[in-house]
Length: 271
Ligand code: DGL
Image 1 (cartoon, protein in one colour):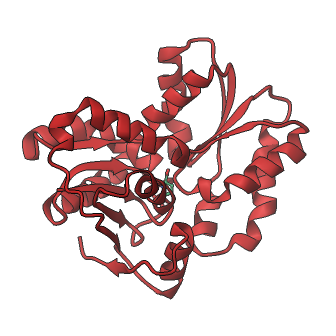
Image 2 (cartoon, rainbow, N blue to C red; image 1 turned 90 degrees about the vertical axis):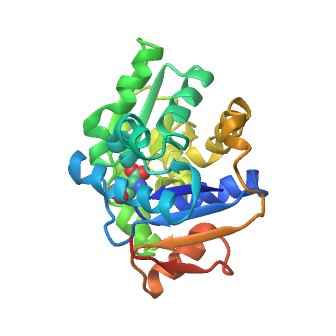
């Protein structure tokens, strides 16, 4: 059986690449919902329905044992409900994991007292990061701002327009004492280096960039070592598939660029 990775669009290819680099022996099936991206400004109910639809496809058609929801918006809007309602009724022996809890653990491990968050409007409005952080450390300060324009830039292969937009978002943290910026959207690691450089320029000091592709693979490895009943059902043929729900030349070019491999084959699927 396979490991599924799901994102609202192409951003999740960055984390999928990191997962494949860290665990190349496993089989990975990527699904990006390019037909319906962005999710970040939609209602929670709509994001839940879209996500359930994609998860259903990965379980039924791609024989996934375990799915990583790489999308922060889908994680906050759908993960718990899928785990509590959908899985027990449909696939009680399979699992769905998200990216928010590993990020919270990373922040707690690093012992920060003040952090910034850039994420979609939906993720920021939900305050999911604040709620989860305060459960573990009640005096931590969190400064959250939506950075929605980075998603269409990435989905449309338009990196040359990114700098002033990133700068305007990072300027929101001026006057705060943040030690790190959480990239709370699957797409943003694509601009990780640029965000770090612009933060240095705008804030006049170095802040850490918390990028999910850097620790989610280790978190998945830890999960599998704690759950041998899941791990033993995973095939190890190093087979990878990359599917999206809408396709055109620009999506294909951007997928290859996000995955940093021109040779990957990207296919359209009907879900
Ligand atoms: N993938 C989404 C996330 O991580 C952002 C893109 C979108 O708005 O669909 O939140």
